Length: 263
Image 1 (cartoon, rainbow, N blue to C red):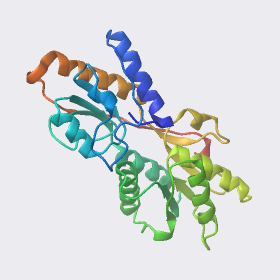
Image 2 (cartoon, helix red, strand yellow):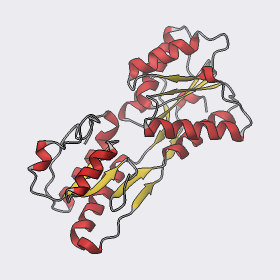
Image 3 (cartoon, rainbow, N blue to C red):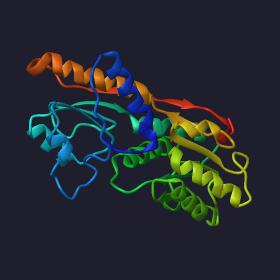
Image 4 (cartoon, rainbow, N blue to C red):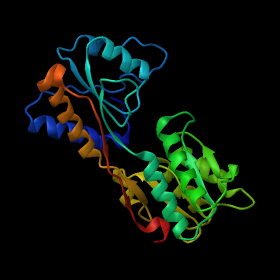
């Protein structure tokens, strides 16, 4: 697994479903984060199991190596890079599309995107959905309104501060919740208000999103449901063995309207 505030709900869903199904659960954090080595962690080598749930974006090489060594896998929040691997995912691009489209319906055209590192599957998906919504509305996305930064509140703060220095600042921001928290503070430090001067929409609906000032409009992902579905897939693999048909389950997102976008 990988550690991040977003994944707390997924892990909770996994734990709840495992308990309900009377399954033993072993949690590991940071597995497969490194792309420098394909040597999988010692803990996995010594596991007395063949069934593993991997949460978050891990190296495709890591997935291939585990599968090649006989492990049955379910990926959560990552599309399978190979066949014969189960997965539970959310359509992140569709969520970004809905968030951007909502801002367009509110009358915004200069909508900035604060995103994480290039070539990261999650942020590439957000950028894709964001661009599609703008294109359908006939809005050309200016390059100066896309800020790439680190995935944390400080990164959001720094990106928002840069956007506020533009000759024509954006009227709305789309980003993920962690960076939105920093962006919100940067707006206030710049002497502006949310949503009166700049509307703000996030993605993930983390625990703190409802408790910012103002509360954050965001795309909610059913995190606990994803965890429960992953356990059910793993149990199906155990029970069906070689007869199991691997599949990818796509869960539905929802746009949670709070005060930060103005409507």
